Each structure stands twice: as C-alpha cells, then as structure tokens.
Figure 1 (cartoon, rainbow, N blue to C red):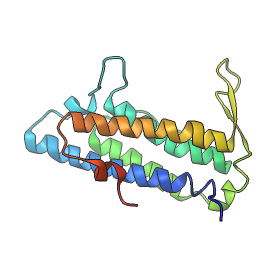
Figure 2: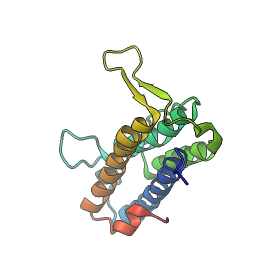
Figure 3: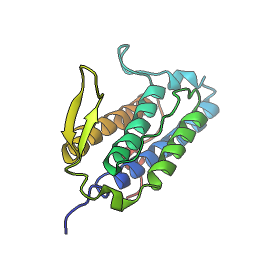
Figure 4: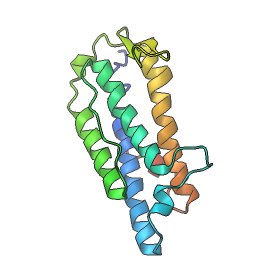
Length: 169
C-alpha cells in the first residue's frame, strides 16, 4: 500500500506541533520558576540576523497550516502575527492543530500532481507539483523552524531532549 499525501503531511505536522506545544509549556514553567523575564526566551535568537523564537513558532505554524491546506485545495487561514507570550504561542499552535484536524483526507487524493503556485504574480513566483511541494519544500521548511525553536529553548537552558522534540508517535 502506498503512503498518501494526507498521511505524509497532517500527522507529521500534528506530531511535531503537539511536541512544540509541550516544549512551550516547559519553557513557561522554567521562566516562572527561575524568575527569568519571559522575553529573554521569546526574543532569543542564535545569531543576530536570525528570526527570534516567537517568529520561529509563528512560521512553523504557518507551514503546518498552509502546506496541507494547499494540498487539500482549501483556503489557507490567515493569522495575525501578534503573539507576545508563551500562552499566545500555545494558542496559535492550538488553532493550527484545530484547523489541520478538520481537513478531510479524501481532499488530498491526487494532490501529488496538483500544481501549487507560491507567491503568485510576483517575481518570486514558483510552481511545484504537490509531491515536490510537500517533500522538497513544505516539510523541510517546517522542520527547519521547529528545530530552530527547539534549539533556542535548549540553548537557553530548558531541559528538553530528543523525546521532547519528537513527541508521541
């Protein structure tokens, strides 16, 4: 039996976003217990030219909602990027998980060949088949931002490890 585009996307996004949510919960407890200003973590970066922790989580959620939405042929929900606390970020993850949880697996049928157009009408327009969009673009982008968020937390003393990154599977 072959792997469906739904199976290769929604469960992966769900697993890692759920794990990221757990890591955010641990970070919130850590800053409270250690009496650390939350912005020390929320605005953390590994290098000055990188996006900060908040933006990493926002972008991870953006890929987790946009990739399966495009594959399923439904509108991508728009979120304001106004999160400023761990609770706000956790709410964004919950909203993303709720959205992707509504996607019908049948809508993904044939999506491996569906043309996905990124940045339509701009000089950066890119056209990809659904399979390439998921495997060569969407998942790597998502993994990059989830991994960077994890690294920022770990680098700043949150006691998490690979099991925390991976979550339940």
